[in-house]
Length: 157
Image 1: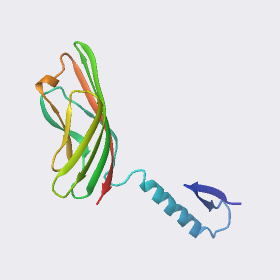
Image 2: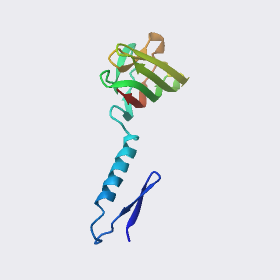
Image 3: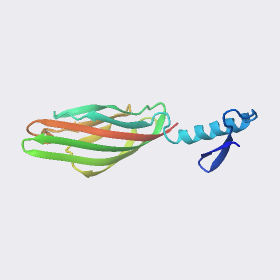
Image 4: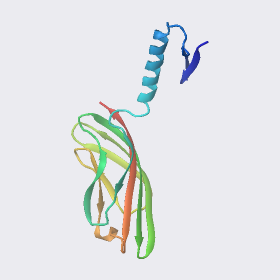
């Protein structure tokens, strides 16, 4: 009796150890279904959950790993969380947000929706690099630690 494996709503019969051959097409169909299902989990150019440091210095800085190829990506949908902590006074500044955008062949258009205020400004360069800016008024006093955690799904060309 075969073992039934389910992918989505499809069922596939797999042979148990020691059973007769003859399941080649069934195994191929199963492998194709699994491949299709996995393509929705992570596509090329998607970004899995990643964390990078947010410095406490005025200026504009690239966020390592938070970039998109203009040769391959036409649309982005990103989620992020920023947490900045200072010791003098003891304070935490947090922000969660969504970045949606598209590349039109020469420039990126993005929209950013946020909840909270981590006292940073996010933007994207023409080459697809997400960056943050801190102004002097965004510098937190005392000992500082800061991070941004992000992930992204893309639509490729």
